[in-house]
Length: 249
Length: 187
Image (cartoon, rainbow over all chains, first blue to last red; front, top):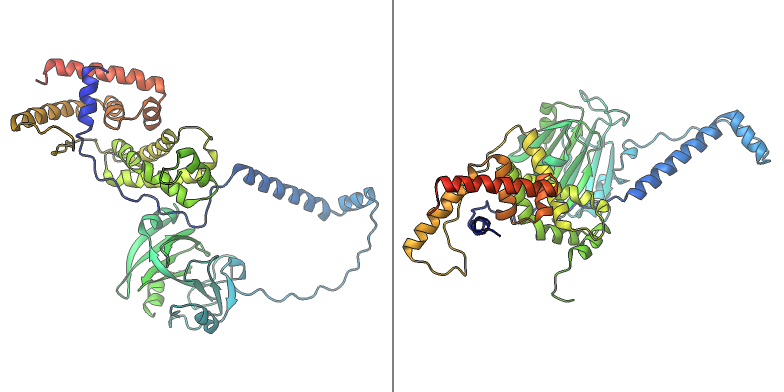
């Protein structure tokens, strides 16, 4: 090493670097690295299912396959029974359907129902280990004046509550590129109005672990910290409507 | 072995099986060098912290692609440095890196006379000013090799160039720095 290189190395020991962050990693909740073979296996299985489904759906092909396999079937057509209409929000993966009273008996913190929306049409609860520590409750509202149902869900408003804290460091990054975040205040508490199409919301659950949650309606969302309970109000509504609902809590 | 830190490959293997604690240990091990590398690229501590954090998140997502037995540090530095470059580029702002000197003496330094302190401090300051005044390519390669003390592979990963280019660029940068010193000798 030349004299100059030695001088530079020595100089490097006297550089005033900015203070390094003490903790850059806060975990990824329930996620784990996805292995490529798993992706390919899933894609192949899906492709195979599609191909088989298409062959069976097409009558001539189905008959040809049955003939080839020497399968002879008789189809007895019966009038279709009317299936019960699906429970609102059932397809959204919100947990187990329940009632407010039952949910309250299983949670150690107080559920709040926004008076501006009234009693929910359906209630779902998710408990650990599937849900965040402390559990999570979702109130589903089907029709509310001035708020149209979102997409195919038939749901106008979702109100989700869980114990924890908003982790601003991760929160901004995981919301997604199609959304904008604006700071708001709700009853003196800090909140965020996310307009656009957010998809993921991360918060720190009651045990201090990051918890990744999907914003089910992928539409405008108001999030605020109501004294240790994180409340999310999702729906195709304006900021004023969301703040009015939140303000009624 | 009890009390002995696990080596990188053992930690990687555990992290690839979804062990969050193992990955956290990896981050703890390399977060300082990752942050400083990002700082050298972005010139901003806030951007460097964001880039390092995002880099570690991306590295976690890409762990399955990490080749067993390969050195971990250059791989992580490459991801963090890419993130830092993208961040600096997309934000449309390029902070010019201006490194400064600490005032204190490190533990183990011999207690110098007050005059020696002044002379050594002046010398370092002038040398650093000359490094700061170099072109960005020259400055980055010198800072990576001597200030961050990255080896050739790591410097190549951090700068996004081939190892051979690090070598030639470093040689030219040192030549230009020598020329400046000869114009205005340090002592």
